[in-house]
Image (spheres, rainbow, N blue to C red):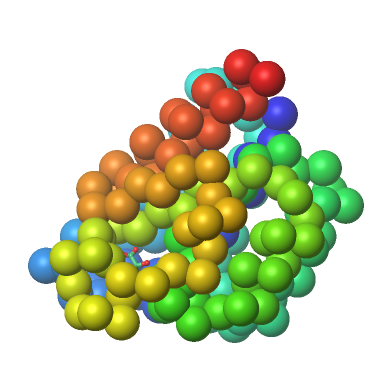
Amino acid sequence: MSLLVINGPNLNLLGTREPGIYGTLTLDQIKQQVELKAEQAGVECDFFQSNAEHEIVDKIQLAKTQGVEFIVINPAAFTHTSVAIRDALAAINIPFIEIHLSNPHSREPFRKHSYVSDLAVGIIAGFGADSYLMACDMAVKQLTQR
Ligand code: DQA
């Protein structure tokens, strides 16, 4: 079983980036927790971050050819802007969960719209790093229950 976790722009700054909103864990610390959980579940996990829209689109396209079975994605700011990432996710037809550390619906109005939510199996938002861990649990459950 194979899981791909995708992180969008500025998530490389976690730990120091607006800690009151995003928490104090670094992306590397979150990655370690996710990888441990995946390993315990016997799932192969690729954890990816990019600040560039085209690199995320390329990674999503590659997922299909690499046999990725499930995606967990925090598109970060691209959630609210990227038709390209939406189209890539729609094109590959791999189930995915959209996640956010914060709850975008409790923030500025421009964060209320997501270009990917309607394509997602589900959405987990507002639980900080636990959003990632919960999404991994759900991804494993989805993969094993097929
Ligand atoms: C985010 C929420 C987005 O609105 C924001 O642009 C981010 C992070 C989150 O995880 O809470 O960069 O996706």
